[in-house]
Length: 149
Image (cartoon, rainbow, N blue to C red):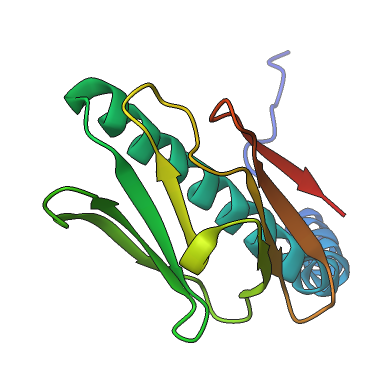
């Protein structure tokens, strides 16, 4: 009276699992493609804010002003030492992301003083192809804030 145990899966069970996975993938792929521009925009805004805070940190650490220069034509930005003009970091915005507007900053440059404060408050607005926006605001204290619209 030995019990007989089945080992493994039947072909029908395997085909059912593969079919379910295929249906889930077919539904989720278009949703992901639709969300991708917004994900890229948010990621780029976070990277930009992080790099601005990096320049601010360098300014405080080295007691030298640092600039973040925005090139709207090339869709890029740089973090530079304002005394030596040494390039600390340069990034090009991902495809489909552009600078929609930069306000309050002279010559499209955010300057952080040796105390970490911003020489001028300003706003940078990034946009994607779907017309979605992400705003990075620089407060006079040097606080860098991201908000999505």
